[in-house]
Image (cartoon, rainbow, N blue to C red; front, side):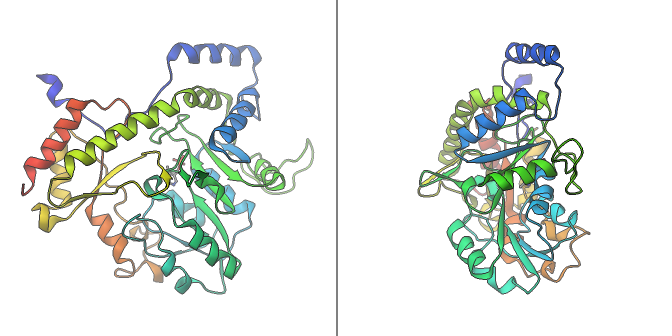
Length: 375
Ligand SMILES: *Cc1c(COP(=O)(O)O)cnc(C)c1O
């Protein structure tokens, strides 16, 4: 009976078989080349670029430092247009670069930055747009490109929720000037901690590589005050092994997502996002949006009820980034400025989603949601 009430967390990271990792560890111990573009680092950069269908990829110790460095690489300054409906690191990367974030509302279908509202937020100080492919669903990349081209702005995508996502067969990572990835433990593909910047030409790749290694271009020349954001051999070895299993991981996540959708579709007031046309998804999250009038309970009531049943969803993203003390004083952060994002933030719960989530656990989650509402 005990098993019936075992905790179910929002995620449970995928790991490769330990014995496979032992072999890599042995090799790393033998070589004693632990970081600074070692063999595993080189192999992983090549393997990931190949798997993801991108030209150049530079590995990082985590996604946040990759974001901070991406802004440095393009010398972004002044104001940057971004979304309040994301993980705080998106906006923190601007803060660390002394850039003023300008928040713009999101669309109600994809929960991504609304391109129709971008132009109104552009000022003479605007230099870039920093959109996020939230939950791995691609932004309206063509509209965003059109606006960026018209106004001479750079586009850096926070692609931390996407892994292998395609739009009409084209990798979503190939849009924008740069895309930034995270390989944190909670993401679809993880290296414990880790990240990457994707770019489209060799000169930019070189600049990014220099920036993540203190600005060194050779033994004695430092061309820029770079940072230390290098991925080490341990992380890279994990990454190479994880890549062997990623297709299974995504298949499993898709299966669970389809099951959730089937089982939740009859419950009044529980809404979710469907697959987008022409998109190959990575199923990184399964958010539901609670319409409290129809469901009969608020999102927070359901969130607490799930917790009481040992089911730990997460409210991604609540509060909005614009509501945190560091940002809430900005003009663009005032209540009422971002109605769609405010509503999403009030309604969302991400349900547990990971490859080893069992059918009986999905039953427990769905039954709890069903019994608690108006149905
Ligand atoms: C995870 C995440 C980050 C930060 O990545 P880390 O690797 O944890 O530093 C940034 N943006 C978004 C949208 C994320 O989900």
